[in-house]
Length: 251
Image 1: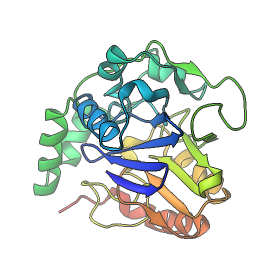
Image 2 (image 1 turned 120 degrees about the vertical axis):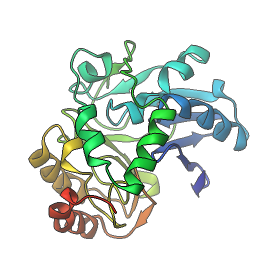
Image 3 (image 1 turned 135 degrees about the vertical axis):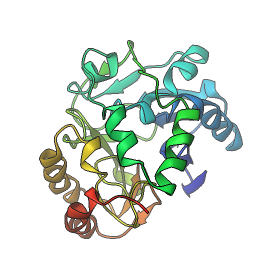
């Protein structure tokens, strides 16, 4: 876990990140990792002097298994509101399934580094089809009335309702998979998109970079990879430039 500021923390799951926002004694969790990452999240919460009972809401960037997989275990222990963009709610509830086909993921992983990643996510529960029936859409536009007061930023493309979260007071943007800085299937580090096979709409994922670039933030909290500090326009430009390489297989 990395403490970014006094009240913002990035939790490291199985090659995927989650974010904790603190306001007083209350917490907001952004994303929940793979199914077996739930225990890591609870441990991270306890490490900063809190309990799972302090979580007041969970925000979903998108409903892929590496971002909502830990929710069933967490919700079994602590019933809290789970919020997502209205376009993402059907995906989270399991009414639609915008997830890369297992066969495509296996084929993309045929390298020493890729095989290691694939084995780790299978152990973490990555083959599960997780549904979150209690998810509800954001009640209104603008900042959410949850600890940290994040503002949803629709960044569709990776999924139909993919959402980043602007932490205006902190100058940070939790980008989920709309902008990442590394992944075991990619051979380089820095602002980039995930390989196209993970995107429901690859051209939309490119377009979403424009929306992210306009946000008033200079720290990126990505869904995968390390924290990135710098101008968001530069980050978006780097991701666009790197996009043709996202089809390259990791060594």
